[in-house]
Length: 397
Image 1 (cartoon, one colour):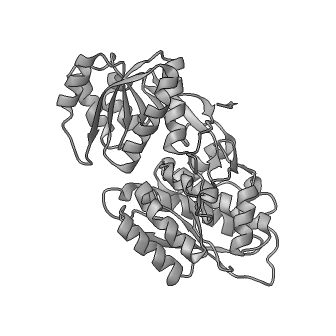
Image 2: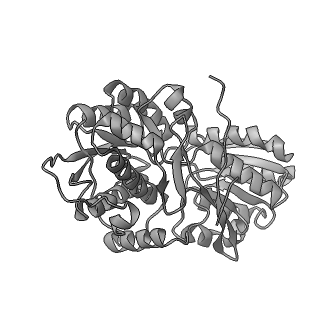
Image 3: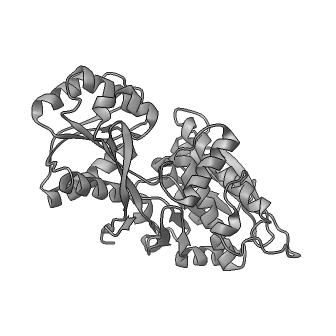
């Protein structure tokens, strides 16, 4: 259930649901104009975040294969061009320029990292190429998009502010938490998520008793956890890395915090591997996600089955959001009746797209207003509490 709280081309490759079920009329007979749609994917394909990049490109490829096998978009086939951002702004900019200048892509999806996406925005704007983000969550991306300035940037992903509001509200109203400690990753993502949590906590009479950040690769959290154990926090607000969560959870058990202090935020608390690492520490953990494999919709289940069959591995959130974003872009091209850049951009701004999680529409900052799935770990398994939307207040221009 859901609660209200130009000519160039595209590309990708794999397969899942029947595309006609997702985008009616997309498999129209091929026309004389058979121009290929070139689609660029910017993602970290090397470096510490390569795992996320691999899932992203596979998800996108799966959607492209589905679309092409269904006849393309009004006869136009999609072709994917991938570029490695290495998870850094400098490399992300270089990758974006290569895709636009050398490969002549008309559309770009990227990046996983918010700092990379922020650096890509002016490049796409100068080139007049549509940048559709599928996985970066820093609100600054859409603060500066649409009426904020960058008219060629759109985002089909919830922001840290959406997530922070949803988690804070649930933690206060459903769990009764008012006292928190922060243990978040020291990145744009981790710090901005905490800043937005601070923005909304007063609405729910919440306070932060301690605030700490960790670097990628850190493995010893005992001193911070000891401080949290002694300061009376009811919950740890953690926006962090999936590989770090099991380490923190095991050390919570070691220091006697398991079952006494609850993790809330986002750090892939819900995966079987994470829960198995320290079940007592993960019990009760609260997380908001753009998507989960356990989400109960026919389209979502079909995606999970197809991805798993194709790649012999279950999909994660990055695989899903890139798969979904390719289908969203395909729908916009179809509704535009053209592969002209400006016409596709205008169609995207007006679109009503039914995703497997809920309806997607864009606000005047080119930010998708779409649901987030809220879950809680109960008896060692993720229990989905529903899909929630949250409206944020943009800064005054």
